[in-house]
Amino acid sequence: MAWSIAQDSEDNSPTYAENEWAVDFFYELPFVNPEAAWEAIQLVIEARPNDEVILMTGVGPLESLLGQDGESFIERVEDQARHSPVFRQMMRHVWLPEDSPICERFQQAADAGLIN
Image (cartoon, rainbow, N blue to C red; front, side, top):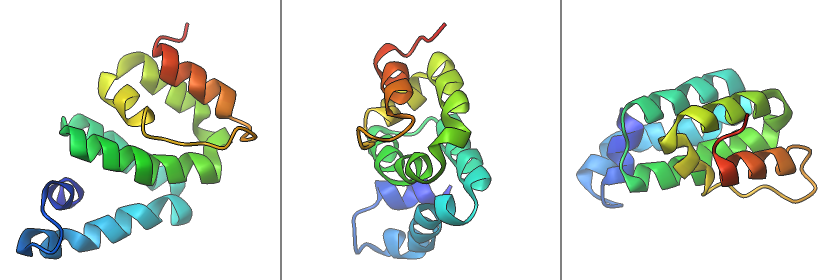
């Protein structure tokens, strides 16, 4: 996945430059196609990413998705938190404003990781 390759590369390196389009695309995706963004995040999880990719996916696309359309995705977030240690790691890097309508549910899922 070009996103992961770019995140693993040094800025300004030839490898980063070849895959920079994926960074731009993935950062914009939550704003233009939230469902596709969710699916792309799932693909990152399935690829067993390293810590850098987990961090960048959390602070970037996942945070943007939840900031834009969190109410539509919170149940999926809770479900994914129950089942995926990688997703729970991503969640640690997401910041939501306290007045977000999903903030409390998100925090519970991120803290516990095991919602029943």
